[in-house]
Length: 305
Ligand SMILES: [Zn+2]
Image (cartoon, rainbow, N blue to C red; front, side, top):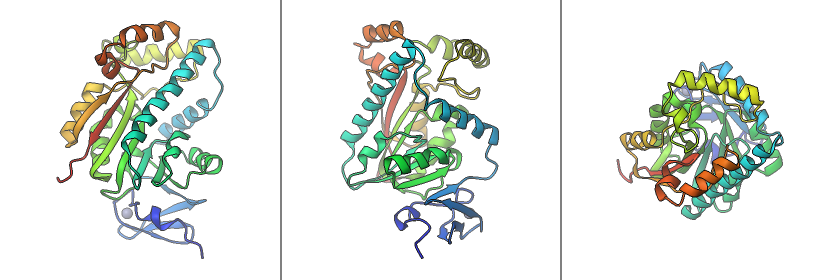
C-alpha cells in the first residue's frame, strides 16, 4: 500500500485542533491525542481547525477566482506590472538569504509559482486555505508538498521550519496579529527566519485613508469605490492594511530579533500618477522601507529561547 502522504511531509505536521501527532490511515490522517480524522485528497491533507468561519472562506474563494482573470484597463496593466515586480523583489531577496538544505513553508501561497523556484536542494511546503489553488500548484507547476489549513491554527509541529514566507496574508486577519506572529514563532526552528510581506497602512497613496480615517468609514468608502469602478482587486470587508511599524513592534514583543524593513522599488495598485510620485520620493531609503505599497519585514527567531 502506498502511504497516504510522504513521510517527509508527515514529519512536519501536527493536529490543527490539539497539536497532537498525526498517524496515517488509508485516505486520512488521524490524531493520536484527540482522535480527529482529517481527509487526504490526492496527497493533500485537509487540516482545518474546528469552527472555521465559512462565510470568510467563501469570500476568500471569490478572491482566488478574481485573481486568475486578465487585466481590464490600462491602470490595471500598470498595476499588474508592479505586482509582478513586487513579487520578483520579494523572492530575489529570499533566495539570496536561503542556503540549500532548508525546510520552508509558504503560508497563504495561493498559486505563487516563484516559491517553487527555491525547490532545488530545499523542502518546500505550500500552505493555503483553498485546496483548489494547491491542486493547481501541484498539477500545473509540480508542487510536491501541499497542505490545506487555516493560518489561525497552523497544523505544523514546533520548530518545523527554517524559514517562513508569508505574502499579503495578514491583512485578512488584522485583529489576530499577535496570535499569528506567536504561531509563526512556534513553528520556526531556533535561528529560523520569517519573510513577511503585507499591504502597508503607511503606503504613500493610502495612509491618508488607512491611518487618518476611522476604519469603518474607510471600509464603507472603499467598498463603494470598488463597486463603482468594477475593480478586480476588490478587498473583502474584513481586510485592512496593516501598519509596518505596528507589525515590527509586535514581532519584537513576540520574541523575534534582527527585525528589519526591506527597501522595495515596486509600488502596485496605483496608476501612472501614483507610481511616478513613488518614483520621485523613493530615492529616500525611508520611503522605500516604510511608505511602499507593500512592506517587507525580515525577523529571526533567536537561537536559544
Ligand atoms: Zn488532535
